[in-house]
Length: 119
Image (cartoon, rainbow, N blue to C red):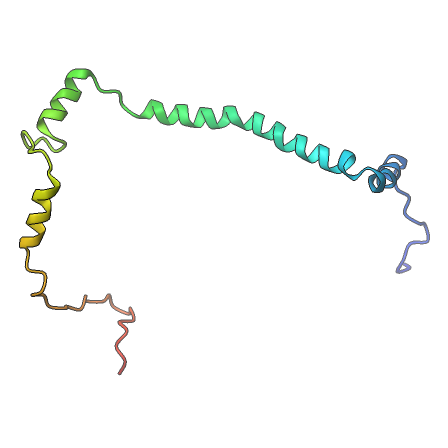
């Protein structure tokens, strides 16, 4: 069997005409179909994305007004009435902590894990 075929490759006449006209009108024959494909894809994918978010919204539970009021009064964990949060109070609470008296401790590594100590 010969390495190269004796019969030359003949392309379709429509493809040859497209390639010849592509050099003269590149945007019309290449750019415009590409942009139209992107825009059409956006319109076709929008309902799919909406379906995804609608499915997620169905999973989220709607609570009644009474339940919302009970959560607001009890707090998230149900620990009774919560004191309102005040930034000044939080600032003074953090100032009262002794941040200068601390000791650095190494975390125990798992077996086989490199601990970074040079020997």
